[in-house]
Structure formats: structure tokens, C-alpha cells
Image 1 (tube, rainbow, N blue to C red):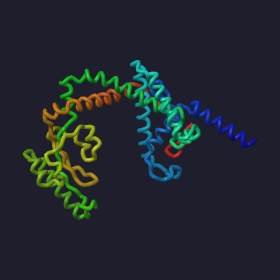
Image 2: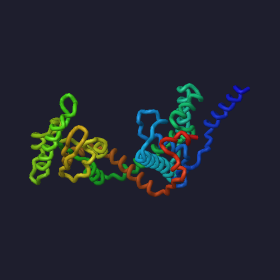
Image 3: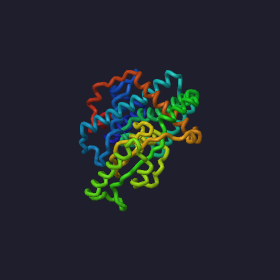
Image 4: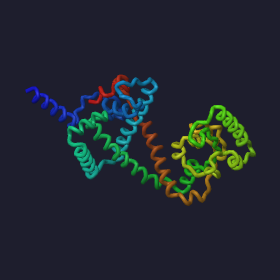
Length: 326
């Protein structure tokens, strides 16, 4: 009898999970759209730093919590604003898109080994069934809105506007590199690193002089001969390249200060790209410009909706996330 009751309870719990029951209170409201505490807890889980240890034994710092909170809130606002804009613009998921989402979910459940295995997958991922469905839909709504902006962007970026975008978001980067790593990949002794940094500082003063020949200095001092003469880079690529993150803060033909990075020291110079590069790569530049415009518009839209963070958010920490996955 007890075994039957346990099985019945498990079946009822499984039914509740798959039916999308939501005992979770509201955590965030974006433009009238409510996000419950379980969804917020998942985002917090997603953004916490993985220490490689058992999560139940990790104590996170206040800074780690605040960083995760900020990232979680931004992701929530982004997803909800995308849906709000789609509704305003009359962009809806097609029957085919909804059918594809359903089929994808059924396939996942089959691949996992059934509904019980799917529920265990949700538990390990700190997800609810309704959150899983919503996240899959979010990708489709994002694509709908992106496609809408792309069509508008093709008309918006006239040749004049595209050339202006190119001049502001593309550059020829030249650099002088001083390595603090030896040929075997080991860190140089401290005395050698100090000497090399002092040399880099001297070369920086020469490179920043009004009449400096940066190419000649690079040829004489740079330890990366493959970079001599410079190479073209877009702002997005620069932002994700550890030694180029500050490149687009420079004016054209400006030389950076000495940049200390994990493998040594860099001196950068931002130079304009030739008109021929624009002509030869116009299609790729146009695609990047449209993506950039979408990001800019999305940021503006995010500022246009009220965001309310409920008190329960303060109760959810990086240590008690699973308590709120309901």
C-alpha cells in the first residue's frame, strides 16, 4: 500500500511538472510581463562562477552574487523586451514554428529515455518544464525580431551610412609586442620581465612621439613578426580579443598606452583601412552593420519599459537556488 502511495505521489508530481504548474511567486516584472522566482533562480544559476566543486559546499562572495544578479536581470529583461516588441509589431510564431518546438521537445524526451528521465534532466539543469518551453520559444522570438530589423536595416544603410559605419567600426591595427614567455611557454624570470617591461616603456615613448615611425619601431622591437604591417579588424572581433579590447577607444592614428596582458606587453596603433577593403568586403560589413543596429535598437527598447524587481529576489542567493526551482 505504501509503495502504491509513493508511486501515486510520484506520478502526480510528474504530471504537475509537465503540466506547467507554477507555485513560484513573481520575481521580476518587465513591461507588465511577469517572470517567476524559479526562472530567476535558473538565470542566477546560469551566471554563477563554476568553481569545479560540489555546488552545495561552495560559499560565494558578495561580489560574485552581485555580478550574477546583474547578468541574470539583464538576460531576463532582454528576453521579455524581445517578446514585448514582437507583440507590438504583430510578430507571432507560426503554426510550423510551434509544431517544430513541440517535435523538438518530444525528440529530446525520447533521447533522454522518457518523461521521468526528462524531469531528472530538468532537475539537474535547475529548470522547470514551463521555463524550458519558454527558453525554446525565446530563441524563435529573438530570430523573428532580428529578421524584422534586418529587413529594415537593409533600407536604412545607404552607401553613405554604411561607409560611416565602416569608418567608425573597422580599423587596421598595428602593434608592437613584448613577450614575457620563453620558447618553452614558461614565464620568464622576474628580473628578465622587469627589464623587458622597462624596454617596452622606452619604446612606447618613442612610438607616441609626434614624428614616430611606428612601422620601423615594430620591425625593430616587436616579437611577433607575423603582425608586422598590421591587419584589419572589426569592433566586435576586437572586443573579444584580449589584447585588442581597448583598440576602438583610440582615435585614428593614435597610439595606445602600454597594455599589460597575460602573455606580455602590447603597444597598439589604430589606423584607417583603405577604401579598397570596404569595396572588397562590403557584403560582410553590411551584415555586421545590421547586427550592430539590432543590438543598438534592442538596448534602446530595454530602456523604454519599466522593470520591477520584487523583494523575493533578495532571498535567492547562489547557495539556495534549488529551493526556488518549483
